[in-house]
Length: 329
Image 1: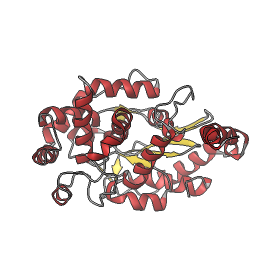
Image 2 (image 1 turned 60 degrees about the vertical axis):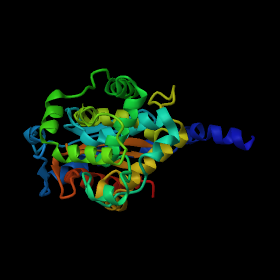
Image 3 (image 1 turned 120 degrees about the horizontal axis):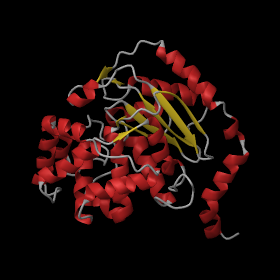
Image 4 (image 1 turned 90 degrees about the horizontal axis):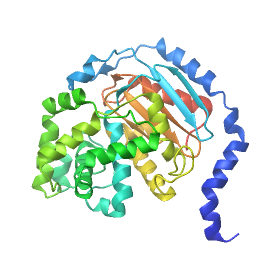
């Protein structure tokens, strides 16, 4: 077999090996329920986000887990089918659409380095002359929103269509209450957009860009929806049914790399150290993580640690990858 042909078939070969080998033998359900029960009895020092008032209305005791394998098996427990605001997790889907649309030109306006600072920091933009460190911090997502507004007449509608096509769920939508709650209290994001504009890295009206950004963060999904939606990043860029490419394998690899290094803001290194998976968090308490060629998993617990990430979510994923031995390391 020629080298080029072998490389083309690598995703298929990897997938077939997974079906034949030990991954299907892992007692996922038993492990999920065991860890869930353990964590339910552990003190949770986290706090629900209240700086977005609508998020503060969520019960702090919610806890759900949903895992989907590339072989199509599903395992879940707790509040795994209840909808919640995914917040910054949606930035990965925004990035996927932008990268798919304009390719490497995207990196002329946003970087791929970890920020090492809080997700809404203004300080770093001054040092970096208005080029956000990566697309998963607020400033970076604002720039990506602006990029898509140059490519589509109705960028928010285009993003929704893209997400619905990935997951096969036509009910996924923006939530007006949450978007308005963010808009009424989004002073720092207003400052970020105007600061970016001053450097020439926002091309459209700041109000319109912010409107798109607040809609993006208002999307509601369940743990099941997250696991289904992010399956394409566990599956070499292919849809869960493996019938079409959402991204190329190379593009999927790069998005996973960005999630690995930037998905948890200034806690990204700690998450990599403890969990060992590419992932993304949101201040609604959700976390999605993927083990390429194996599974995607959505976890939700609204109480956040001091870095703005779900306390129980990280605890669960650390124990899960340790118990199963299934991480990228």
